[in-house]
Picture 1 (cartoon, rainbow, N blue to C red):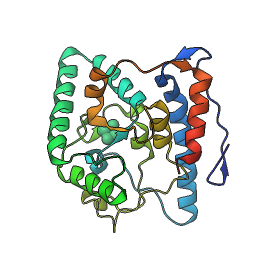
Picture 2: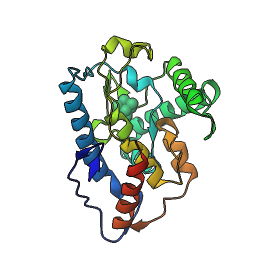
Picture 3: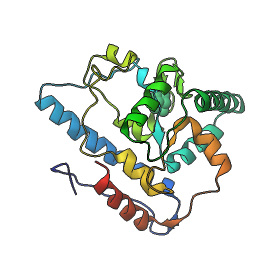
Picture 4: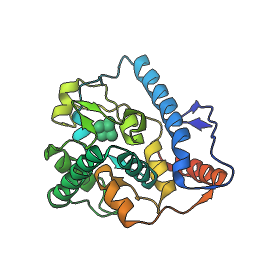
Amino acid sequence: MVIGGETLTVSFTVPAGACDSRALLPDVRRLTDQVTAKAESRAAEAGRTVSCRRGCHACCRQVVPISTAEARRLAELVDAQSPERADDLRRRFETVRRHMQQAAPRPGAKAGVAASVAYALAWFRQGLDCPFLEEGACSIYADRPITSREYLVTSPPEGCETLDPEVVQPLTRAVSVANALAWTTGPGKDSWIPLTDALAYVAATPASAERGGPEWALAFFENLKDAG
Ligand code: SF4
């Protein structure tokens, strides 16, 4: 398929039969890596290099929008931990979720770009780490959400400490795979949730509807066309 003028070879390995939306995640992660690698190459041609390094983790204090499929995957991961670790993670999730409901309420779906930017800044200024951040590193790196995979910068890492839009230069991607995934797994456009709402969402929402694997994949590709 052609994304942003670049041809990508994408093969999906979803089950032929009925499955839930989590079946998309391995293939969508591989696609994200391809899209990101192309974006890095284009940036390098323009003399810019990605400056993100292990240990610089200011982005893990930003709001991380995820799809409902990823919410279910993250809840599974938490459940798979030792009882002590799972309890600790659940406490962290709930602490950030409750705090942000008061300090950085999410704007409505039609609020516009300025309100979304204000929301993101208000969130960041609370200075609360993602529940999965451990000693400056992501403790679920292989399973981190698409947003965490896509977000890279070419500006000096110090800029991320203030999230100054005059300084921070995110890597420009041809498409937002995270948006396409969130729109696909639903329940509709603007259906993303903050990562820290994942456990509350899963507890309150019955398992996602099943579709055939190819049907999920086709719906995802349809959404990808609009997810620039
Ligand atoms: S999931 Fe990992 S990479 Fe993403 S914000 Fe949390 S700690 Fe950071």
